[in-house]
Image (cartoon, rainbow, N blue to C red; front, side, top):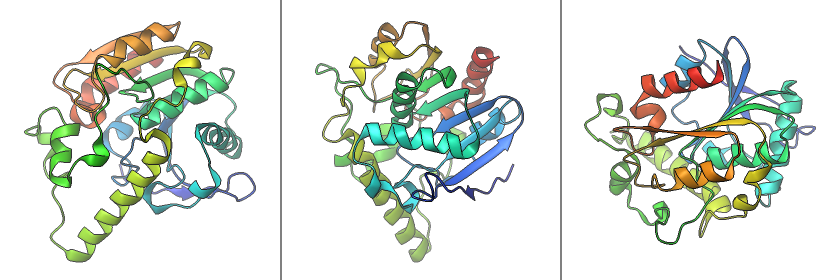
Length: 263
């Protein structure tokens, strides 16, 4: 499925994010991870669109979009999400988020429990365990990144995904977008991702599915039980053989878990 994003005016045009949208059924707002939406409407989103109206915005600052300069902290980001939903005509929906998108989804569900029907958190960041720290991917060299975020580099679904383009202009653009995405990510999780989420997780009222890859080297699986302990109506499922990029590494299992949970 080829899905092209449409630019949406948010908060009177203060933000103009590209938004990918496809599918049918109940609305499912998906918040991307640190890598942005550079890969487009990926196979996991395509599979979910068979059952849900999948809405995947590019968040301010990612993929070289404007608007990050108007957001000072996580609370501003939550207000942006509320304004985005208003612009899209959404008053109640399922919400899912991966990695830093999982942190944003949790913050949104804690701030606006009235808007979130069910919540899916996939390898979310946002907490800190000193004995099991989240990896500092800002210090990782480009050639070391695949080993950090993928559980099994021989996974056929990942073939070519991390291979740099041969064309010099395309390579320069890829590196530029990666820097832009890292810069946007750093605004919310540097130097550590603990921005107070642990004090707000109890406010989440939605039934919550927490998904984790058992080979996750970026956000260790030890964080899963901590998230579960702080969200009242939550369940934790571990997907074997997956690293941090669960949606792309184990797409069938990942989608099946979400469908079974959302109904």
